[in-house]
Image 1 (tube, helix red, strand yellow):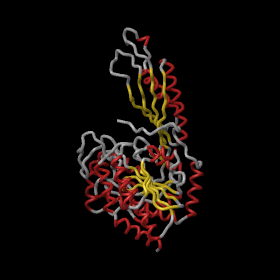
Image 2 (tube, one colour; image 1 turned 180 degrees about the vertical axis):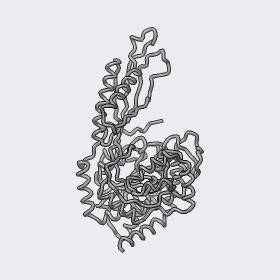
Image 3 (spheres, helix red, strand yellow; image 1 turned 45 degrees about the vertical axis):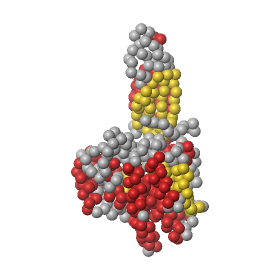
Image 4 (cartoon, one colour; image 1 turned 90 degrees about the vertical axis):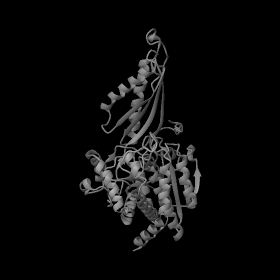
Length: 478
């Protein structure tokens, strides 16, 4: 009965402000901004937090769009993570199942971070309102985390100690189902390899030149041969950042590669990274060029905390999935019917980690049921800097159905749906579930202790930074 009363109170608190939370999400959607340049988006969230009584520290850790909103005092300290960066080239009109760019080639919220930031903020506000009403002590801390898509803001926050005093950390991500994530993610490191050579006439005096472009190509060949001799789960991707110019009759004296190196565990990524460095050094030796290596950022693998994930799952089950209506189901069906079998299959694989009846969703456009938490040894093939938070503090995250089943990630279809009534209803569930989990955690010191014990056992109790202290956020980019 006590749990039921708590759920009803939190539902009422969220319902009273649901329109405000939906507007915050939509307002951020309207101003899509790329990593470390999310000034307007951050301002929208900061303004809302201040209106709700949070003290906000801006420009945190040398990142202009990073901020922390704090309410309350003393222990326990519960962190709630929000994101708000967009993706390039995913501009799209809202709520229609037809590709129609609002700004040709412009950015759009193709990962739903407008909703992620707003939903996390709504949860922080709801938890704070409940604590005020009942005189509950403790601290709620909302983290405005920039640049998840390409700059990895949480890595810098974790490296520089901003999560160290958290007793628990909660977050969520838009998705196709309602479930607490029990899978891991791939760790990732980002590196730049810059070669410097000597120009010369490519026909008259090629022997006087030293080609930086040749060094890049030799490095890539070496890395491609390395693929056979690393664990099969590893991934190495590269892209030219600088090809040394457009004239083939000039030996290129400068060229640069950007690499992503991924593997299931951050320790594996760091080991593979050392081997890639050796290949780059060999390419420089073969071409007589100079080499600069800069590992700019990275992401740890996500380590789900079973204790906190259990609390969050109980909360999600208690509040129930989003209360979709027939209009929501009709919109979802439009999108669902446009997807091919491969896209449906990919979504089903995500559902299969939690839903025992996942096969039934082959024909269901919108997932409304909540699945229980299940810890698995599986991992997603993407990466997230929530992993860095999980290595710095006990962490749990969930998905809530925010768009149609089958919707591929990082797509114009996501952009279209995350400014719709489907997402607005998802935000309510997010706010209710994370707020309830926060209160349950604060009221359970024994579970806080158990979560800390599990965290130490699963991570070593110490953050493993993918890169060194000299790495700085990429504040300048195209």
